[in-house]
Image (cartoon, rainbow, N blue to C red):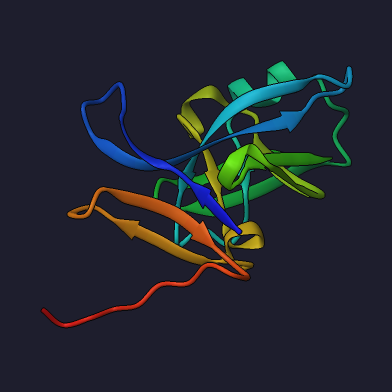
Length: 144
């Protein structure tokens, strides 16, 4: 399985590794979302803007998340994250995901190791590659 991402030029002028996906909303529709591929993130976290669009009832309220920017208020929601794999197939990850509740806490949702830990993660700036690999896909590192 291969899930491709891209290097995306963000509003602040910085290019970041991103995988586009969808999240199942409270009304049964799939909402598009961009996920920062963060190899240091312990878990997947939705931004406050994405949380508002999802209209999901929190499973856990008043949780706190910490990171480089400090501590932020958050909730936990139960839903599904859907990513597109090679040849337009879909893969769905069901679970409980954190979401920050303050807009300024997180500009973009983060794809964390609760999902990326299932894959070999390639974040190659010079090669312009962002992808998740598993099963019949693999990579090789060669010295040139």
